[in-house]
Length: 240
Image 1 (cartoon, rainbow, N blue to C red):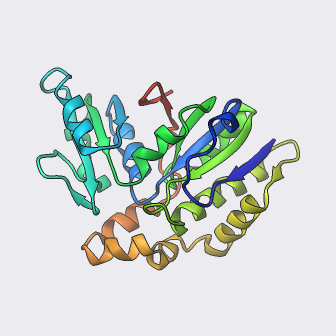
Image 2: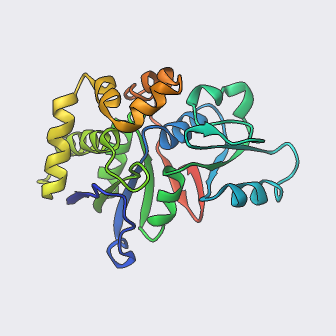
């Protein structure tokens, strides 16, 4: 098994994706929100790239069945039910509902890797479960941090490093790490037990604190609060 991580969020070449498991990571906050919402009873999440697409798609579903969530500039989109803070997606609000979600980075990332054999949703919240599922699938793995508007994202790569560390420790066979994967693993080991510190060092983490969203950082820094591993397939994210 070979594990690679894409340190910059450029769309991979489609010919490099078949026969691979890809894990999309957007810790602050899209993949954390997706894992949180599904673990609290949402039936599915439909990630889309634009606000206009989200609004159009929302209107195609039966009234009362679907909620709109997302952000631009880390702020809730006008007219949407939710922003991009996990705490907004309470069980009382999302249970039994479909969620159409659009964010600056994370929701685009899923469509960038749609040609992969399997696409998983990764975060610190479901880190060990995601590592175990990736290992069980038995394919080469590409970790895809969604980045910060095209730039390197510290918190996403640290999360990728955690997955690499978990997979390597649990694998019964040798695991080949690319140089990028080895670097991500070392970065995670440096912040192990201090994930909130990594968030506060990251540019996006600092921006969220300025906006008064410090609680989002604390929530998203939790590890292994759920065993759910959502899967993106044919444009929809569900718990497989």
